Length: 545
Image (cartoon, rainbow, N blue to C red; front, side, top):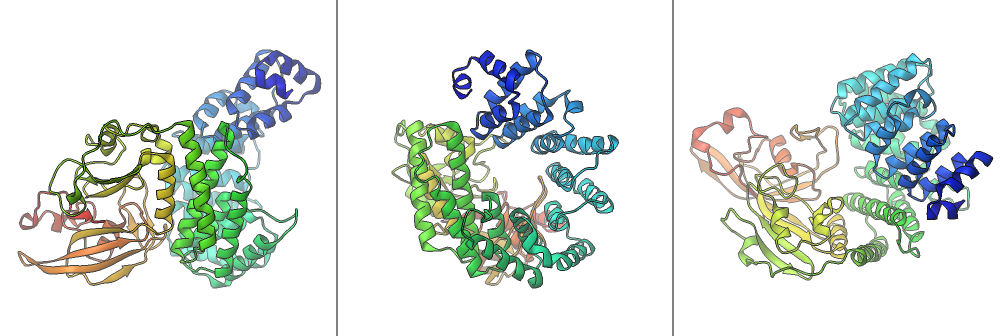
């Protein structure tokens, strides 16, 4: 069967299917090995010759497409067949949730009710995720409210996870979630590892400190991670990252040691397997991405261990070198111009190379330029491609080689790599806190030296909100000079970020009452429109180093 599928004579495999009815095994083999296109072709051929396709076969295909990022294709395949997919609703809903067709998830949830099929808590969670992606938390809250009134066996993480996902900070809802967690804390030993990580992540994102739940939760997670034998419950890559971030504001040393040890076991399982085909490459990519996320969370919690960092450095180097062998960088087409002054002070409207060594560059981005995204005419990516137009500069999955971004109105320094090995080396340094990012800002008021430790949340193009719920973030501020302009107090401040959240400094400064000068997005209209404070720049901020 496998040889028939690998060389392409589909009729042989179809004849075998007619005899033994091995749809599940065939599609499962394709899906688990990453050949979702082959699975789709095989299923289409089977339908063409008149084979009856089971709901489970559809579900396997949709899941395979979704996991490989081919959700658009899976939706096209299922179009018009929803009536036959009674057992695959959640797979289709999940594919819809990840696409621009997120309302389809709500439609399918309604169809389940219309067909008198009782939705599961998983169906409701998928629909809530869809409303969050569609920037409609009001609809998500309505779906959550409906689920609470149904006789469902709701998981322990359902309510806190939904509130955290939708960014609901209403005290009444948070109180209800905390009361429910306190009532069910005695059942933590019986829930799945996925549930444990969801609860941890929910409490972390909601900025809720609940020691009566978080203490037993951490102890249970440590016990599971330390368990040996074949029956030990394994946390998935996503579960490890979510758990690490969930406890980052109230770290437990034993838990973070166990999390890093478990992540190293995931890495070790692939240490002797060189990625040679698409599926293994994607699996390596998932592991490296999760390991970097865990590194970032551990460093944020000040729990990053040196053995873990050393092992991960070797893994990143090996993975990057493999990608370079597949698509090598052939060198710079011409020597890029360098300007050593760019990292200090350059009054220019054009980018330049501040420093360059090996396959790494430090670029100066002027105000009014976008790093990449095609939302503005001036693109830093276009500038880089003039002299380093290699495979990485054409790879959106790896951010075209850019390590980080700067807001369009902000000028400053950007790190960029031209090879995959250099990219992952810099990524690890950035996540481990070995690269420091300093800024110089002019803000309103007499700002004092302080440390921001406030969560940040944002939705779509709305301003980033500081404090309350959201992703953990840290910034340090030191005033460098203070004075008055037209009776308006101002401070020239140096700032260092411990995380790189969207509009982090602009939001932190605005939240503390010292908005950045000429920042229309985070300054009150009254102050921004004052003619005596008008400037020619979009805002007065610069990444210094």
